[in-house]
Length: 227
Ligand code: CTP
Ligand code: MG
Image (cartoon, rainbow, N blue to C red; front, side, top):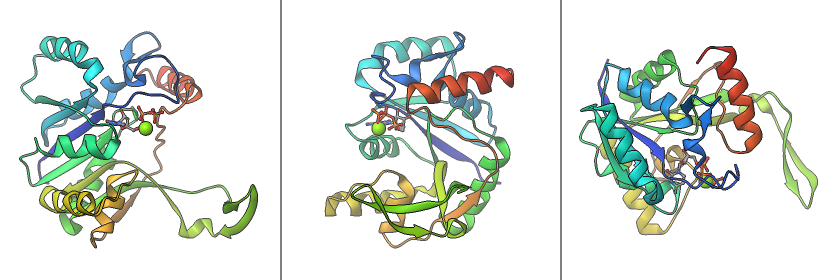
């Protein structure tokens, strides 16, 4: 299997979680900060050669101290931008490997088998994203009413991690920046540039800490699984 470097995103503000500080710094069950779950995963993974943590300017001092105590030669960091896309773009400048994995540190549940499936797919296609099946009936909305139903069998929910050939993702970002386009994730940027995105489905649960409710849910799950 190929080695890779990882861009771990932590540069948001966590506005919807409304904690008054960046949600990725929230201490789950009073023990580990939210971002530590994915940081520890990538630091431990032998195929991961470097973790570029993308941090918020406001948290710079905090993270500098953490990195000092962790004493890992695998960690590098960069300050993020106003949008998630700008944060990834800043992180990309520090990537030296042929393949990069991008992950939201707000998603603490991460599994080795998913990461390896993702890597194997990306080496075949150039770009792959982890995805989950959709179990609810879904529709398009107009003015608060159902406009059109979608067959859930032809839908996927796209999550992170995602993996790309670094040169192809760089090109996609430059293209999107030139055209002034912005997207909510990297697979859409990659696709908009004409590339194919391979979907790698998982049955493992992935929750992004978005609201305070998600954080409570994650605390329960991580407590129950002794993590
Ligand atoms: N992120 C980032 N840089 C940004 C915005 C987001 O690195 N400018 C990161 C967040 O830290 C998070 C991930 O991207 O790990 C997913 O974003 P989201 O869940 O939207 O986090 P926030 O932007 O922090 O939350 P909110 O949108 O509620 O303010
Ligand atoms: Mg956001």
